[in-house]
Image 1 (cartoon, rainbow, N blue to C red):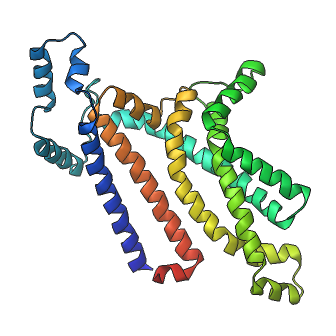
Image 2 (image 1 turned 120 degrees about the vertical axis):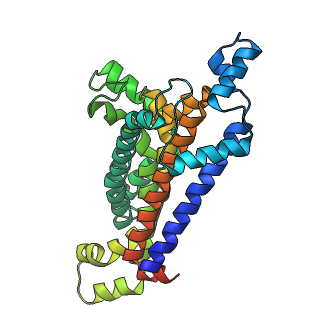
Image 3 (image 1 turned 90 degrees about the vertical axis):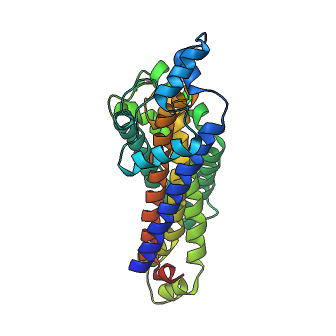
Length: 306
C-alpha cells in the first residue's frame, strides 16, 4: 500500500507544479497591463512605469518567476496589487465559503444520488426507474445558473423562505448548494444505477441468491460495495466540476468565495491573487482525487498493483 500512496503523492506534486507554471505563463499572455489598471485609465506613461517598478513587473519574466517560486516555497503568497493586503488573508476570508459550498453540494448529491440510483436499479423497468432517470436527465440538462435564478425567484422572492444573496448563515447556503448539486446528483444516480445493474448480473450474486440470501441482503452485503467503486471515482472527478461551478454559483448568489474572488482578480489583473486562488483550488482538487484513489485501493486491492 505504501508504494501506491507514494506514487499517487508524486502525481499530486507534479500536478501542482504544472498548475503553478501554466498559471504564471497564462497570466502574462493575456492582454492587459496590471500597472495601467492600477494607475488609472488616464495615467501618464511615467506613472504607469512607476507602478511597474513598485510591483516588480519591469523585471524579466524569468526573474519574476524565480521570485514567485522563492516566495511560494517560503509559504509567502504575496500581496494583492490592488488592496496591498496579503493574499493569504484574502484567501482566509473567501476559502471557507467555497469549501462549505462544495462540501454541502457534494454531500447533498451523494445522499440523494446514491439511493436514487439504487432504487432505479432494483426497480428496473418500473415507474420508479422511469421517474429516477427523468430526474437524472433533467439534472444533467439544466444549467446551474438558470436553476439558481429560478430557485431565487421561487424561494426568496415569492415564498420569502430563504435568503437569496450573501453567505452569513447556513440558510444562505441552501439554495446555492441545491443549484450546484443538481448536476452531480444526476451523474451519481446514473452511474449508481448502471454499476449496480452490472454487479447484479454477475455470477457471485446468483450464487448468493441460490444459497437463499434475500434480495435486500444480496444488495446490502454483496452488490452495493462493488457497485460503489466506480461511483466513488465519479464523485472524485466531479469535485473538479463542483469547484468550477462555484464561480457561476457564487456570482448568481453574490457570495464572496474563491470563485468570485478569482474572477474579479482576473478582470483587475491582480496576478498574486489569481495565482494563489487557482493554486489553492487545484491543490484541493488534487488532494480530493488522492483520497478517492486511496479509497478505491482500499475497496479493490487489485488497484494497488496496477
